[in-house]
Each structure stands twice: as C-alpha cells, then as structure tokens.
Amino acid sequence: MHSSYNTLKIEIAERIALLTLNRPEVLNALNNETLDELEKAFHELNASESAGAVILTGAGEKAFCAGADVRELAKLDALGARHQALRGQRVMDVIEASGKPVIAAVNGVALGGGCELAMACHVRIAAEEARFGQPEVKLGIIPGYGGTQRLTRLVGKGAAMEMVLSGDMVSAQEAQRLGLVNRLAPRSELLSVCRKLAGTFLSNGPLALRYSIEAINRGQEMPQSDALVLEASLFSLSFASADMQEGMRAFVEKRKAQFQGK
Image (tube, rainbow, N blue to C red; front, top):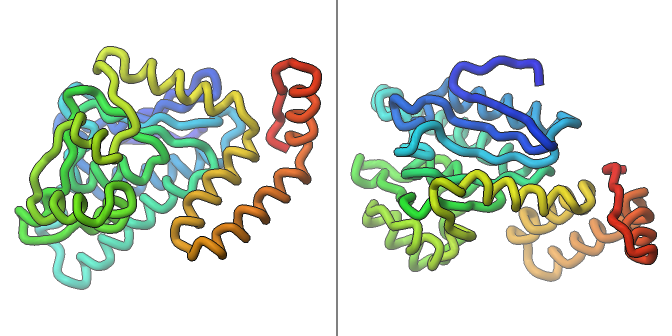
C-alpha cells in the first residue's frame, strides 16, 4: 500500500487491514472523493499480499457513515443522478466482489449510502448503539447505491419495504433480528471482536475463502440448478490448488495448515 488518501485511513497489522472512513466532522458522509478513494483502496487491498481481510469502520463515535453528501446530490439533474447512482453502485460492487473477507464494524449510525456501504461488506458487526436506515424517501428520492436490492436480499421483501418506504431508522438489535447484522458488540469491544472474526477467516485457505465468496455472491442471483453447477466448478478448482493438498495433509497429520494461497 503506497497510496495516500485524504478521506480514508488504512492500517495493516497481522494481515488485517483496518480501513477507516475519516471524515468525522461530517459523520463520515460519502462525497465523490470518498467514493473514488474507496474504490482505489479496495483495488489496492485486493492486490496486496500483506492484507488478507479488511475491517471497514468510521472515525469517531457517532457514525459509521451518515450517507451520501446531500450537498453534492442536490446539484444533480436527472442524467447526473443516474451517473451518480452507477458510480456509487460500482464502488459497492467492488467491495462485495472482493476475494478477501470484508467486515463492516458499524460503530454508529449507518444511514442511506452508509447502510448501503455496510451491506456491500460480507459481514456486519454492529455496536449496540448503532442504528441503520434508508431515509432517502424523506428527501423525495430513493436509495441509489444498491439499497433496494441488497436490503431485500438480506432481510426479505416485507422488511425491506417497511424500512425503505418509512425511511425510519432501526436499532442495532432490530437489525440483528432482521438479519441485517450478524452480531452485536459493546462499542469498546467492537474492533477486537471484528479482529477476532477476521483472524478466524484468515486461518482458512485464501483460495477457499475467495471461491466461497464468489459462490455465495454469484449463486444468489441464479436459479438454484445453475448455482449448484457454479458451486461444483469452484469446488473442483479448489482441488487443483496446493492449499487443498496442504489442508488435507494437515488434517491427517493433526496439525495446523500453512496455507500459501496457491
């Protein structure tokens, strides 16, 4: 990682990259510069040999991310809004398609684009005080960075309809009940819980993690019969890896596997 960022902070330790949205003065809102830097950062992290997993969080105690920068959105016409939505969706797609596990450490409010950002991550761990919402309808618009689609896939049509059409926030506890959040943690323990989970992921084969993420992400968009073919193909690919040989040997020899991602 050689790039410098104006709106992000990146720290890598023990193969875990901590990526922090660093605009606490505006509750870590997603302006265009932040979107561009997020896309660049994830491309770099995906290519980095020093990072095997990513934890994404927000600076300060109030917000993970309060959403898109409304001052920028207010200047758009219809054509500009379409380009903006596609831009935001592209960034979320890059995060979701990462072959390395991405954990959202939701330390405060995750609203609008912030909720969409959390949903693009593979797993969401939330502080007990966190709140989630898609309040776009209160501005006379709809979610544009994938919110209507990822929320529906995570919590189901009825719950997604209620959240999007009301624009109301839900507590971290309700988000967990709905399936939007994997687990909760006290704010003071949030990052340590996320690091422990990332460490669990990293103890497994890197190629197996990548193929699993691909199977789940792509498979949910397919008929089950096609998704099972995809799974079988990725399953067979894993058997062509040195990691598979090492994993099998380690199991038989009752030792910890030393995976190389090959």
